[in-house]
Amino acid sequence: MARSVTAKKSLKQGKSPYVLDEQVGFILRQVWQRHSSIFSRDIGTNLTPTQWAALSRLAETGPCSQNQLGRLTAMDVATIKGVIDRLTARGLTETSQDPEDGRRLLVSLTRAGQQLSEKLAPNAIAITRETLAPLDAKERELLMALLNKLR
Image (cartoon, one colour):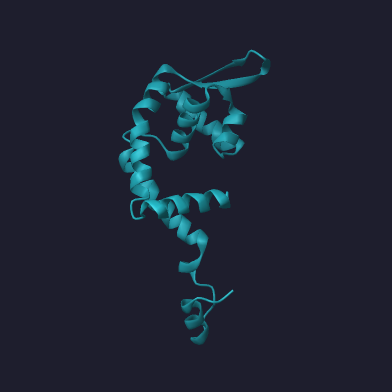
């Protein structure tokens, strides 16, 4: 693989060939920071991205176990538990025993959670649109395809 111009220049100057601005993790973090700023500004309520992910996934799937919800939202056990605890404290989710397995709890949206999810969905769509606004339609499609490939 060919070295970048910046990396070659760094080598000539006796510096490390590792150029932070060329690292995927660094770039993804900057993009995430930009997206998070847009999200915080525009979601219209005091929700974190992880809380919104749980609400929107429950709106899509209906009730499911906390463990399954964690898998569906790419959150570990501790994170999803904290998210659901906070959403439940706000009256947006509730838990009940699974009628098929009394050892398992199902998480579901309350009426308030369902209403909030429906109300905020257009905001969330607009947030994604603004995050991707610097790209044209073909670039957006390509970026999403490539990001999905990297999952």
